[in-house]
Amino acid sequence: MERVVIDPKIMHGKPIIKGTRVPVDIILGGLIGGMKYEEIEKEYGVQREDILAAIEYAAKFVIGEEIKPLKMRA
Image (cartoon, rainbow, N blue to C red; front, side, top):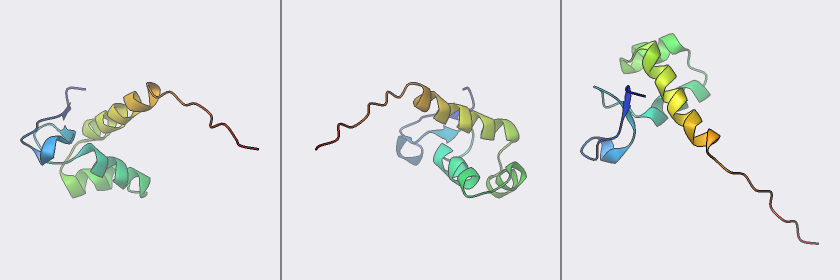
């Protein structure tokens, strides 16, 4: 997680890839949109390890998320 940083002075405190102004959500959005790792690397000037760090960062939120089923009204 050393590759993802949060600095209130950069991108309004959004998580970014260290040493860049590339937000984690932009990388994840690229992946969701079907971009390949190589395309993201070229487009945003990041490395494969940065992409993996972005995925790991997002996964930590999902792992800690508690899901409760909604009660259905009759």
